[in-house]
Length: 229
Image 1: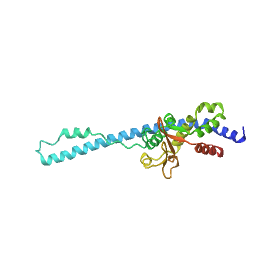
Image 2: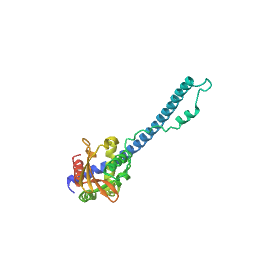
Image 3: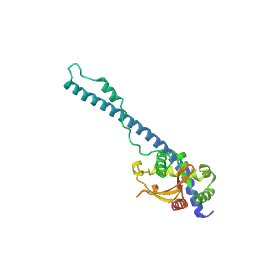
Image 4: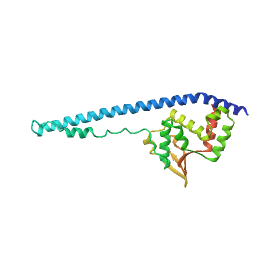
């Protein structure tokens, strides 16, 4: 094994022992943040609904005093109908849209990274043949404990992509909606989002829907970054 390969292995072992713990720590933090965000939004919606109902009741009461006999000062039915109105739901940062189209896959990919959902990201990955061969060759040179952590190229890639997505989140779903589509072939496209490299990726149509493609160029770029670290 060359000195360069030993350096890569040493760096990866260190990453496995430290980034693994950091990854799950971030995972717990993201889940707790999501829970608190949902609770805050629920409370805000409840307050908004109550204020809306109170304002509506006051407005109706004022109108009743002006146009009805003194003894008719309220209309309970109106208040009940206001209370039964559904509060407006806040727009989600990301959306799980499945993978029936390339753009839907991008939205779901961003959603899964935000949720630290490695399993979903893994299902949305497709390796090109050359990329898989290169990744497998790299993984074959890793120590046994690293190979146990990443039994397949998909498992390795999904873990790293989620970690990257948690460190540097994708843009808001509204921004991802503006992505441009470039057709490469009948079943292959490239999505472009100016200024956002991670959204500038290729997607392949498979029997299981559209998937995020990991090309040989992406694998080589990753290994080059590892080498320079």
